[in-house]
Image (cartoon, rainbow, N blue to C red; front, side, top):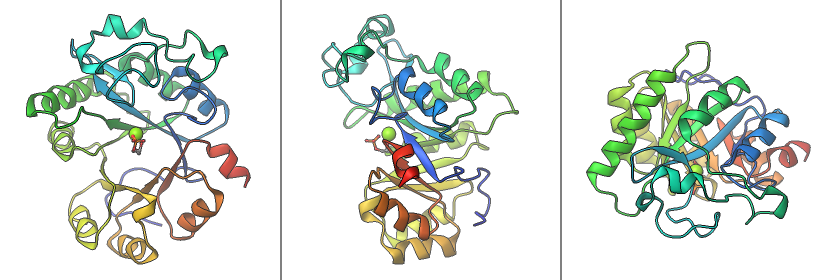
Amino acid sequence: MHYKHFPLTPPQDQLIGHRGVAALAPENTMASFRLAASQAINWIEFDVRLTKDHELIIFHDDTLERTTNGNGFVYEHNLEQLLNLDAGSWFAPHFAGESIPLFNEAFPQFLQWGLHCNIEMKFPPQPDDRHIEVLASRLCDILQSLWNPLYPLPLISSFEWKAIEWVRNKLPNFPIGFLSEDCTPLLIQQIAQIPNAALHCDYLALTPELLAQARIAKVPVLAYTVNEASVAHNLFSENVFGVFSDNPQQLRRA
Ligand code: G3P
Ligand code: MG
């Protein structure tokens, strides 16, 4: 499948490690990403968030309770406080001491491990424009300073489309992904007009008709989050660009 203007190649087996390998290691930690690399997973997805002191960490939730021993909103904590949290014990005792990764340290490591990256920008509920601007421009500054043309470009996505527009303005060559829980013919047509853009959609919203329309419009579609082999199989037969999974190796075997 050839995607007009889209500079990335699909994952070799079309499977993208969601938050690393979230089913087998604490999500969005180096343990999870290391496992992805050791399982020869071609692509990883991870979430980035802004700290109170405007650093970028790799973390999914708005708040700390579920996946760390901290509490409260991420954006109300400074980096130093966040780096001291345990982000592994909640998953299993032998992951105790696993910390929240700092984006600008982790990202070069991912590239060295040969991982292609989908960076998802995350925001608190109803973020103000300032938060969006600070996170997106901080991400762009880091990517610009770390960028090495030997590596594949990361794919940058968000549910917050204003943030994607920021990235497009600052880094016009980087591919972008519009995240949506829903999928409509209009949305596919809109994305088809934007160079280097993909649609990242909840697989439950993707029908064969919509995927056929995306194929005709040459819009790459990435489906989240698939943990059943039969669902993945159906999506592959519809030529999706990639499928996010918490356990790509299990799907690969199936
Ligand atoms: O980027 C795909 C998927 O990760 C979006 O949902 O909540 O898992 O970040 P979420
Ligand atoms: Mg995500």
